[in-house]
Amino acid sequence: MGYLDTTHGFYKEASLTPQVGLCCVTSQARFLPGFTIPVAMQEMNYGCGTTVHFGELSPEETILYVGVGGGLEALQFAYFTRRPQSVIAVDKVPEMLDKARENFILAAKNNDWFRPDFVQLMQGDALSLPVEDESVNVAAQNCLFNIFEQDDLTKALAEMHRVLKPGGRLYISDPITTKPIPEHLRKDERLRAMCLSGALTYQEYLNKIIDAGFGTIEIRMRRPFRVLDKQRYSLEENILLESLDLVAYNKPVAEGGARIFAGETIIYFGKERLMDEDGRIIPRDIPHPVYQKTADYFRELNRCDVVVTDPTYHYNGSGGGCC
Image 1 (cartoon, helix red, strand yellow):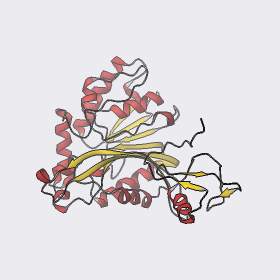
Image 2 (cartoon, rainbow, N blue to C red):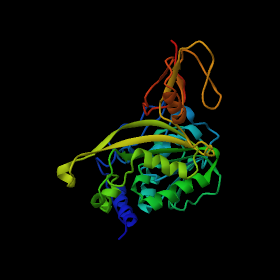
Image 3 (spheres, rainbow, N blue to C red):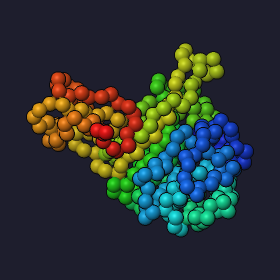
Image 4 (cartoon, helix red, strand yellow):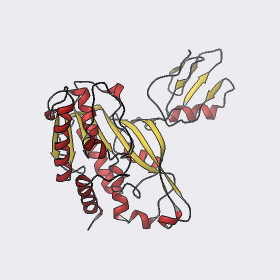
């Protein structure tokens, strides 16, 4: 039985009996006015972070969510769209779709703003999405793509790129690893299904997204997730897994490479006008967010009137501040 069959069986079990401790099932969803989460849906919060970035969603958008789980993030997306079939939720596991359908009925009883037809549930595969080309504004997946082996991950990212409109956004939350995971763990199909052994390193994951055609990437959060410890997993040293939340834009990759924003800023305090390598003016005395290439450019210049900050791995699109 291949790893995808193991994953299918594992999440069939998780749909029938909530798996406490699977990913971040104990985490609480952020507060939204008038938003009540059914207990059964909260118990199936099988994700390692979030793909719902509240300040960026608008009612006219169509949103694709792959790997519906108990339906929590699809429900959160529907909170902002509030129109029939504005959220498309795809899952390969029929039992998971059935459970999400039950949870949406419960959600409608507790939320006056919600109707189950706001979410269109579809059985389908992330490797061959049942969605037309360039038909959605937003695509999202939480703690799913790390399960795939590398060739399948390439296919899944290509599918997300295919269905997104030009300029559309791909929201991802996935585990990454700080050290290469040994082959004996990568081959363990159940550990892979549990989001514990399929993770790539930070740069490997970004390279996969860039290779799929996404030209701009914003790192929203990078934080500790799990430890693969020496005793339980037969390792020479512990391996820290992290949770990575990011937004990738369906924009062409620039000639000089993709633009990756990871919280780096430039603070310029000189006298004359300063420009970056592409001729853009750098403001004076204000922390100015820059992407990786520009930060490296100024580090190499080593100017005495420029401070380049290290990556924080948290970027929300806003600049610095001056009170």
